[in-house]
Image (cartoon, rainbow, N blue to C red; front, side, top):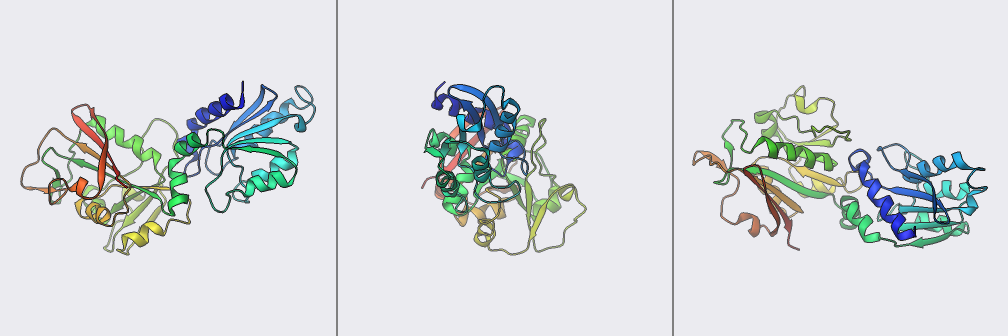
Amino acid sequence: MIYGDLMLRAIKKADLFKYSAKPNPVVGAIVLKENEIISEGYHEIYGKNHAEINAIEEAKKYLGKRFKDFSELTLLCTLEPCSHVGKTGSCANFIVKTGFKKVVIGAVDPNPYVSGRGIKILEKNQIHVEVGLHADLVEKQNKFFFYKHKKNKPYVTVKIASSLDGKSHYKNKKNFITTESSRKDVQLIRANYDAILTGGNTLRIDNPKMDARVDFFVNQAKKILLTNKPYDNNSIFFKDASVDVINITNLQEIIYSYKDSEICSILVEAGPKLVNAFLQEQIVDELIVYTSKDELGENAVSWFDEDNAIENYGFKLESSYKIDTDTKEIFKRDD
């Protein structure tokens, strides 16, 4: 195998942990002797060992059997090893201490607290470093992580369910618009995001749980509740959840307040008033619309006040396909 093939292998296998490692990026690492894989490691669970540590600890089992010293080996990792001491310690320093003489890196970490510093630690300790192998794929795989550190704000997606005639709901009444298949698809979307945001009206009317109800392990999203009115903190929304309750109304301030947090992506699930407020502030990057084949009629509440509102907000249709009898459309900001 050549380094390119091995990097692709590490990227692919790292993706298996995208739901459990978030809000951290997914990372893969491979230890090899010439073209022989000695061990592999991945960042599997948020707060636990990083990929490099897992790969090195696995390789230690073969020390004296398949190799005599770590200086004989090459470490390949999809993302630059961290330099800071966080929940798990500095990976760059651990690599130096282990004795590697060569490290191949996919992409430089965009986090300003890390970017380039891990590489400098390695090079300062006479480790040969190669950088940029399939960097585009690593960035695509961790799009929320890279976006947040480049744009200095989390990636914001709004998700709505609409009737065929553009309605959201009947006033002060909870109702399902889309099919069960679409609602299952929403669970997968929730599993991808670091935080889910909603408003007080949605909490009071729908009493939602708003977690990812899936059949695999997921590090559940933080919840963000925007309200300046009384609410029931014993509702199911708060059960076993980390919740930020915010009573300020400046949406720009709210979103940018997370720029220095670990939150890289926020999914907004709210009613028409809050959704339109977000869209008007032009801080939304993506809009997902599930549209039913059924109409709710003139007595229901409309999502938007005018036709072509989504396009007028500056979004362009990227994809459209059927889920059962519903249509799912994904719009991206047309920058």
